[in-house]
Amino acid sequence: MNADIRRAVSHSLHLLIAAALLAGIASAQTTAPSLQDRIVRVTAPSLFKGEVKGRVSAVTGDTLVVERFIKGESNYMRVPFSEVTRCRVQDGSRRNTLAGALIGAAVGGSITSAVTLSNDFSDHVTESIVMGTGGGAVIGGLIGALVKSDRWTNLPIGSLGLGVRALGRSSLGLSLSLTF
Image (tube, rainbow, N blue to C red):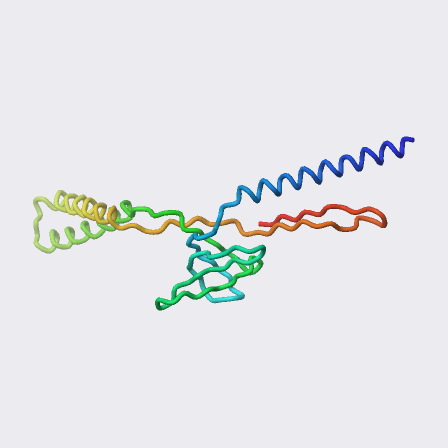
């Protein structure tokens, strides 16, 4: 009798674990970001050199279909998920204010230093260099605020496999593999 109770409890626990795993898989699939019609950059070294940028036109069970525009013509590429080593999704744009300010400060400071030191303005060398650096930072920051760059978000690369496999002679088990 004890063996029957243990077996019933064991089977119940296995069913509960399988149900929990399947519920987790279902919620993971519903919360995954949709790639349809998004701009992506895909790296798959075994298929092509470098990074391919294009619009996702379809996502099948194991393949990503990317539409690229080359010389005005659309070109479709089928990329199996198993070959992808990196995938980035365009996530809006960003302004380059800080980079522009730093570049402007460096350029403004360099030009002011060269002009001030070569013309022998010995009375106001420090003030001239500080003013040139500050003015360059302001102008560079304004230019950087006008220049926008794409923002990219990395997607985790992995695969999810679910299957039934034999655990022993007469018992089956549920195997789950999740890799990133």
